[in-house]
Length: 335
Image: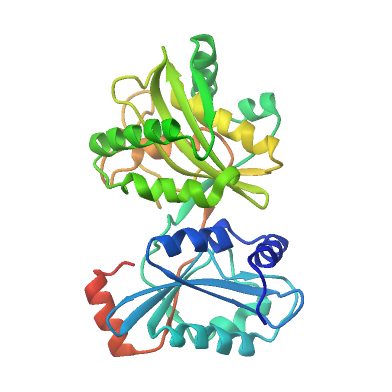
């Protein structure tokens, strides 16, 4: 049974599915070279849905289900759904498919996972922080006192946060320059400008592109997205020279306020280290973020309050043991 992208997203929202299972994320990833296959249980109101991303080289491909499948609480024909899922993967010559759930497996879906193997490490972060989008004062009150102080400091010192339209080239330019600055400072890789332009073009008004200015100079920027009842902080960067006066904190606060105005209930800060880092210094501070050292990022994100969410382990559906070995060797153990 084939359904439109609008119907797909409507059913996904009904199941509480994740943005990475949405049709817009699939469209965006198709621009990055992935093929998209969608499989839902054969029902007018499906209780099982998976958007599978597939890519390959030569005769082999691998599949990936980010933050899915989405399952409802009611029963469905899990065996028939597994067969449809397998057919979709085999039709694209997948040697294995990595499944990266966003919640615990419901009882109705146990059969689907019964003969799967433990998967490789998470592609997406394995932990995140989700913040309830309360009214302004309760939203500030749930923050650590230092974060709350930084937001109010930015307000007092005239930090200005502007939201740019998704197709405003100035906003994208500010964002990408700040992202490159952060990448150089913190030693991590980023995509080229076209990647983020594609993201904004696909998401359109569901995306929030925010830039914080200190004395009219860009200090910090982020891109977030809204889906269902969740807003997600997807990408961000800050200026080495101008990141002062609490600009990054006010930037996140304004992104939360915008998401709340759109009817979102939670704000997902996306990724924190799997383990809580050890603190250093008498005031309990931690080191800055650099490379694989996310201690500074952990402090920044967890001090906004909210709940730390741990994602379940990954699973793999293997279609060819030899092909899986070869693909993983080529991929270096990661997608």
